[in-house]
Length: 131
Image (cartoon, rainbow, N blue to C red; front, side, top):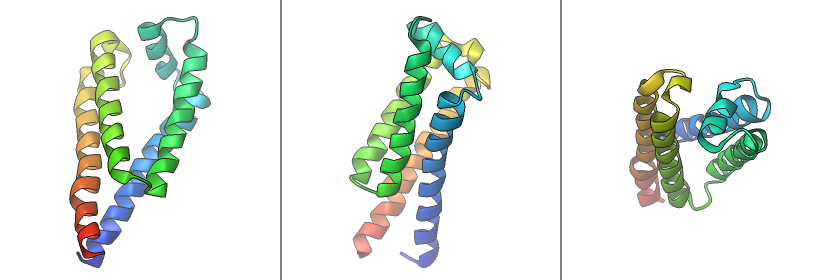
């Protein structure tokens, strides 16, 4: 593995963590993107949607910290892929009108899943082999 691949892995890792952190803090906890709470309300009901979106946001921040820690990174990557897939299937099926790009959101989710997979199971595997 060369230095470029190691740098690429680090950069992608920081990017993935940034996506989780920014979505958790800005989109959910600080409610800069109210559409997220509307999606939760549509799927789970209005009664607890605000509390749930705060809890989801906190969970996303924890995910970002976990990503940066590199602790059990394979388990982390698998959970990320499952969470993003399930969340997007639910949104695609139950609230497509609230999605930023409509049903095209699912395509972008699959790109994100592919990036997580590539970073952990391709790039990180190469790093681990030479360590």
